[in-house]
Image (cartoon, helix red, strand yellow):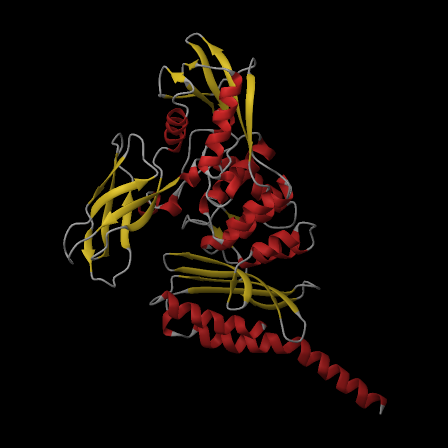
Length: 456
């Protein structure tokens, strides 16, 4: 009787441990032999969230392009390095210069300045506060707006981003001062199929920058197949190509600001008309820090937990690049992409992740040159689970296929990384990446879901 009970218990334990691996193995065999994966590389790594025991491992040590699943690493690093209550502060003051008083701005790299995602950050709210501060200071005339960009470097676009992405809203790079998430809306009008698409307006108004349309009207049901391109070097006109549906009077596509600092400064000057007169509206930047400043206003961002909510939930690339630079500033004293990558790689090395498993080119995953292993991603996810900020981190993960996981998509790359609790109460952490698949992305995603369903 005793031995029979022990045998039953042992078999139950075996099947309880072995079943997920067996099911995943069967599902992955079917998945990887699918015609869509004929020339693809697939990696799946699954662990028991409690014990850390490996449940399934296929190519977990192979560096893969991750797309936006890389954001889980940037977000976890930011929580740990900066703290969940961290806020960005953009400071405004009055300084004396040889040409008279000027408005002196110390940017913080805040990616939420004039963002529409929170009531308190909207451009109208911010501009009203700044105007009130200038009025209270009693200043009637200023020479210029001076931006102190000392620790932020000159590079706004990470290396490795492709030209086709840069003019579109998701291709907005981060810099010392970011404005309205460094994007604008382009309102378009289309006539009959095959006719030219015309630009109606931009929202907001763009200073010193225009968009020329080379797009055509497609079929009424064609959807948005347009693409925005930055101008060639030295020019001030962006180009819209491709097509939008025919018969539209106000069709909106979103682009990235070509020069956010210029937009920021000229918006401020326009808003302060009637309160203060500026001698010049030219953007003046300096890496020399002023000492004698009459501070008049400090703009504070939402706290980090709220920023990361939108960063992961809506996959805002700008936030990733801003956070990476902020990590670099905190750890290395320099707010650049390179310093952020160096700091992040060193940070996770100290927590057991081989730097060779974490080849980064940006903070958002937009670069197709990023190479990260699924094992590294799962290691970060398990570390996060043990931290006091985990509830905010977990809450930010989107829900796909009834699973808490971050998705990632770039050309021929698809990924999902996250957490799942099974029906029998087991908690799993996983990362699944596919590179160089063929055919429809929608079809591939459905097949990936079928594999991940084995964790439910």
